[in-house]
Length: 294
Image (tube, rainbow, N blue to C red; front, side, top):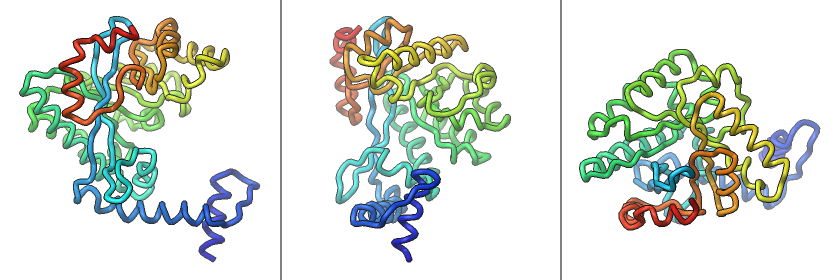
């Protein structure tokens, strides 16, 4: 019966009218999810998570304009695991709220150390929809950065497109207050949800980050280029900066620059790095690496 249930849920995930047979691959996938759920519950207490930082480059000036803090799980058996392998499980089980608290505290502590050492780069980090459900979230967030001695001008709070569109008036007011006090506000993975354009225009926003799926074919597909150009035009219309993630080639960067994209992030000029490597890269680059694709 348990095997039949697993197959049924997989069939539902594929859409109505589908069927799915239980097999060894499905069993292994289910077991992986069960193990991940169990391990995630204790992973924060075991201090198994790390932050990597990926620089962001201006396509206008070639300068580094900030970075994004990216979560990594140093799994005791599997080694480093990327967010796509555990964030969906964390969201389903509710562990995402605890993970989000860890990221918030770690970003505050890390950026606080950088600030005291004279480094002034802005750092972006993701905020989950579950965190927005907590009435005290913004108070706790402000307190974390205040305690770490970090001015809000050094942080960029990223919200998913869906979370931003569904946010209550109370949450939007808190976001607006955060922005008024110096924080940069961004929508992440834009293009995967169903944005209300009037609501987008009214939101307190500075930057909109294109979902990587939008740009992966822009070198080879006319349709992809038409879509990306239209999305960039829309974002510019609401007076926001356009950021492209997962930019992997110079050709992609050149196309995006011609379309009016402001900033890129991706392997085209820098991979995600743990703190020591990131700081060394920032000290030694002197913008040379960035200007090679500018």
